[in-house]
Length: 395
Ligand SMILES: [Zn+2]
Ligand SMILES: [Zn+2]
Image (cartoon, rainbow, N blue to C red):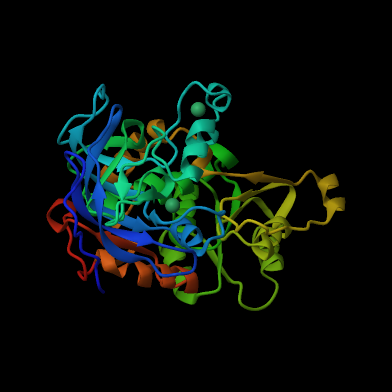
């Protein structure tokens, strides 16, 4: 791995050099570069990154399926670290606070926020697509001085990140940061799908299609919510085994046969809730086909733009429905403390979600594993001391 070196001195006061994982153009693997990071401006904080999880959304972004004009960009949105400096006016966190990142920092005042749909916050969404921080600015630039975009308003595949103060959620210090890193995206997304979007009730029958990083969180959440039957569906036997260890009651191998018919047989009539955690037309259709009358398919997977799904419209007569779900459909700031308590009480296992602990320059390989559907979460250990783990170590 070669790294660019910064020839010119920093032109702006307080700039620091950080190693960061940059995607220069869609389809090209990310590479570690030395980049400039400006100090936090008003309403922003500087975070020393301990660890970051590699999520499928990073892959989609790097592959160019989330839209044009998103490069060059520093990847990473699921992570944890320690606040080391605050910009003007920040009172919500202090230096030394341990935090996890929140990739949709709600403004609280737009129409979506006011109607309680904080994951649909309009300015947060717009700044994310524009590659800005939630404050509307950019604090990253490349060696040649050109501006870099911030991945999902965060950009935490780097030694430090400057983010909006609203983009961090404080957590207690006793939670190992290499595990806490998962909370801000995968865990919030999976748990929110069950508790906020579907509102799973005790005794219900649930199907989960796709047992990767987020799918396993959906299974854990469904178990805690009291679902009586949890059918895990995947093509990889090792993922199905992990799903069973995590609380699934049944496993269906989707690589052969009629997976929907198997779910209908296991649940004696179909699932009350079928969670699609892949983001593809055939699996969204599978979620629909696995439902009982009155059931709901919850689409959690992020589908590339342009993907269309066809459904047998006659079945709307049976009051089936399809529900979109973004980032757990709740308020991450309100949700994370409860998730932390579950982890501390030993009722939500995070460590067993991590299959690989890697270095920053291992991100490209981790993204390839996600494309192939291999392994669970890869966590980049950026600062071993802070993270409480070492790259290459066994989780
Ligand atoms: Zn993510
Ligand atoms: Zn808002």
